[in-house]
Length: 126
Image: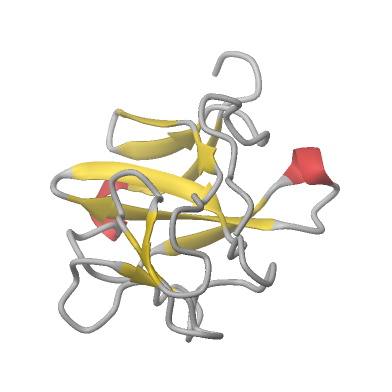
């Protein structure tokens, strides 16, 4: 594998709108976690931190989607995030974004390309 790529799970582990996978972010000294979910056929990964209070999103380990499977939900205060963009559409951090992580799928595996959040879309302040 090239660079900082590492396997985070088998591709078949992630089902559209269902449970996700948590993993450590080594670039952030393991103090933070990331997560990956599948949404509309594509793997999306983010730092597991709500932009409002900094708490982890999942309400049970790996459970990031609300009951309809359309939005990611913060377990602390119910903020809803678009799974495709990480943009908060409802709740106290409305307008902020989750920090995206770069992934790719290859040979039946989901790879994390690096542990650092992508600088492409910084989180807005609530």
